Length: 255
Image (tube, rainbow, N blue to C red):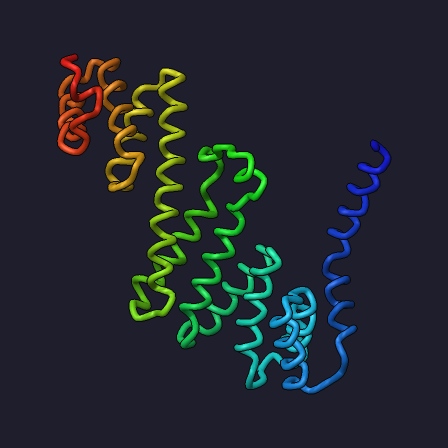
């Protein structure tokens, strides 16, 4: 078993080192045909879910006919294929290149949308979801990047057909980010860093309201201020808790 593991690692490293040359060789394998003919082959591959094959053909078109009449559509399809294969690095790089070179293209909203989906896909872990493991404490960088891409659609392209879905996804991401901040606040409180836990709680209240995490954030603020002897801040936080969550035990309690 150990020898097999070492062999797998060695092969993985070898693939990583030869990635660029392998990609070039894959492009060379694509038949020497017209751009339109190759594009038809790529579309057929996409329709049949053969995304790696589509990437191979589309990359060949992009390389051989970079300024052709279908060059933009080739890049848009390539972006979709990268998303479907989970190739985050290539997908984000292509999206950024397209946006940089074609800032006024009528499909820039789609590029921002696909960029967001690629970032979101990096956050998804089937095995964690199946096991019911709470990973709210994991690095939220990808979620923040996705939120930023989606917010561009809402702010700069209000009529976009991706707007409605973008809003729904932003709400879900907002909850994800609030969960992360709450996990950090709990971490600080557990380690008796009460100023930091109170500040994190306040951050959640200020930037992630309304969300399910706000109630617990207020609880952490109240308990932190109590330990720190900051009675006025504690009273203010308790007042906010009472207005929004009147049945909360800290509100009912006379303490």
